[in-house]
Amino acid sequence: MSPPLSATVAAVDGGSTTLSDVHADILEAHILNRLDGPTLAAASCASSVLHSLSSQDHLWTAICHSTWPSTAADPRLRRLVSAFPGGPRAFFSLSFPTILSSPSASLAPPPQELISAVDINYKGNLIFSKVQEIETVTGWFRCSPFRIDLLDPKETVPTAAHLLEGDGACTSLAEEMTLSWVLIDPNGLRVASLSSHRPVAVHRHWLTGEVQVKFATILSASSVSELVQCGIVVTCGGAEGGEMHVSEVSMQVEDMDGMNLTGKDSLVILQRAMEGKRGNERREEEGRRRYKEYLEMKRERRERKLRNEGTLDKVCVAIGVSLFAAFCCCFLFS
Image (cartoon, rainbow, N blue to C red):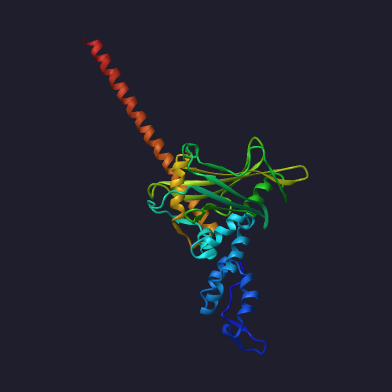
């Protein structure tokens, strides 16, 4: 993150110069355009002068394109970023933070199309960027399990990065890989970030030897006690020479019982997520905290289900023994 912008600038003669004494062109061309999104938003609160300068669309357009390179590569997304109510600054404010909660119901019509803008970085370098559009009105989408695959089954994307051998690969990917998955409703002009930004789990596939990196966002379902996991899996392997290639980038939505939701059910949840509240905490910390809470709730749910099934089994056995004893008594004394 860029360093915070001070309200005063030290002068050469040892005094201080207020921001009103610095020409606006200098602030804009040499300071503001070097800030990232959160820092620019914080700077806009420092004074009325900075607020006016920091609200210019071209600054936020550049920040959106640098934060999510996929939005700069696709002509349609470039137009959508500017078309949001409030401009590119509104797009950033909705896409950058994590989703905290979702409304219980949405009055808006469900999106007829969804656009995924996905960017993966490893050690600070972009290794994967893609935009994918899917229709949500077909019967196949609504009835089938919800899944978005950015790569075909046999497709791989080579990268300039090198994958370490052994357990070092898992450690390196867990610490150095980041992913952003921005889901956009182009007709309703709604958007949400569906990635935890940092991995929540990394493990090596027992059969193929490839490393699977998991990102997740926890969303509200029909009630506060019911949560669903929007899970993103990135599968990486090593080619000859150690070059890393990406063979899978996919997203699914599953409930607390581990069942994949259909496109129809997932669409309702994703729509509410795009209309939900955003968090102010750091994305990595918030994403990991909510994922740990989800796993704990899932574990407690599974244990409670096993206890209920065990109790039911005992009741059935007791009823069976009682009926058998009653039958024996009737047979003996008849």
